[in-house]
Image 1 (cartoon, helix red, strand yellow):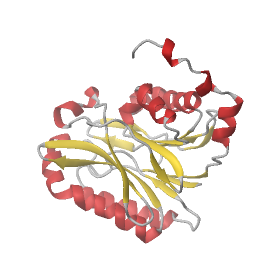
Image 2 (cartoon, helix red, strand yellow; image 1 turned 45 degrees about the vertical axis):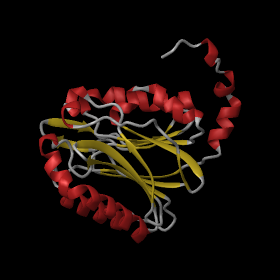
Image 3 (cartoon, rainbow, N blue to C red; image 1 turned 180 degrees about the horizontal axis):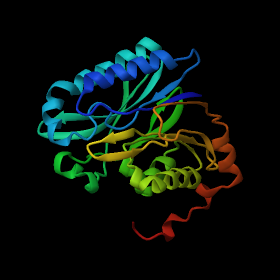
Amino acid sequence: MNYLVFQMELEIGNPEKNRKIIEKWLETNYYVDLDIVVLPEMWTTGYALKELKEICTVDGNQSIEFLQSLAKKFNVNLVGGSIAFLEGQDIFNRAIIVNRKGEIVHTYDKIHLVPMLDEPEFLTGGLDQVEVFELEGVKMGVITCYDLRFPEIIRDLALQGIQVLHVVAEWPLVRETHWNTLLRARAIENQMFVVASNVTGTNLGEIFAGNSQIIDPWGDIVQKLDQEVGGIRATLDLKKVPQIRKEVPIFTSRVPEKYRRL
């Protein structure tokens, strides 16, 4: 399965400009056998939290329609990062998954909100449990940034049979070591591919870590960026997932009846 992961520097509070950046980048980097493109968290607005409600009133559906048109234009599946989406009086940090036909196959509202970036003051945490989706017949999952620190929801997805976990993020440089360590840990402990798209650059006084990467089920790095704007292009050998799960059978070795409630 052929992947293209975008690491971008955001134009804060400017969804239209960010849409143009993404479309131009994809036009430049698209290739014929491409299956899935992955975008980062909150690529429409970044953390312009005080302006989110005003922006969402206009933007939410526009950015979703943009992702749908992009998928159809390039005949590619999109793990469309996440956007700020207004429902009633609540703003959700919503990940959008779109197939080649431009159909929305899955959405996920970020469950764990980041107190260090004041998310809980402006956003509402996701109300639903994590669920699996499929692209090209492969079971997959998506989580958003801070969710990476909570292995329970990722193990939940693994027990539902996912082979690829997507992590869309705006992870800061000050916690870069945590980012790199946790991504590899989640790949190893669940024996699956982890595909992570982060932003880079400095926004509203925060420096972001970049370090977008793809990790295989052994925890080995397939491809990785530093802090440059750019993309990762890689082919995932999905046969590795059942192979490794057979060689080191952690899922059949589990004894959940002996674990205390989490």
